[in-house]
Image (cartoon, rainbow, N blue to C red; front, side, top):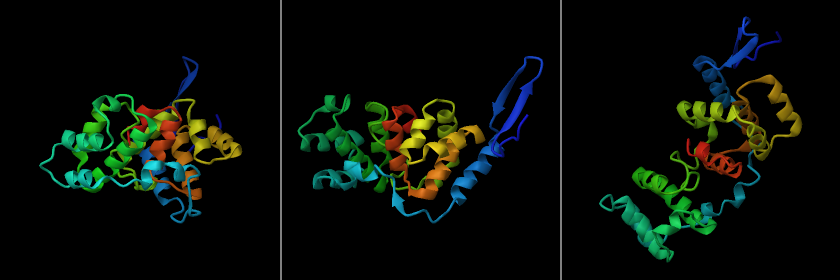
Length: 222
């Protein structure tokens, strides 16, 4: 058997004639530390698509922003005020149009800034997966993602064929993707380490990449 990746352990059942790959909690932690330690100074470039996320430049209407700051206003009241301002009703959240989704992302971003995670949870409960935004702060650097979410996300995605598309969207070259495919079993964590050295990547960026890859449920892990 060839060299074993430092991030993974192999167990072979010789009687059955097959091998199984196991990613232990300890080995995952070592890899996660590698992400946190990887080049604290990136090249300083934003992810190629990050400028295109329209919600980043939006500003909530004053009445909606004011409502967010009133803990007496229930989540539905806050959302209703935004919908009223946009001249929309509740049904618009069941299959939101791109413009509506941008405003919802703007709302959840500001809700987290004001400590109104109840508003974010409410929207994630009533909207399709991958539309309301992450529970984590949008501007949180990927290397600071809590280990619980990082482990779930990377292991879930590494078990799928979509990880190569994910790597491509994060700016990795075909040669880098081929290298990671042979080197490790938790390719996604290694992809994040590679991409982190090239770009400034936030949770919001990562959420958008996963959605663009057609993985809204995995995006909602964040």
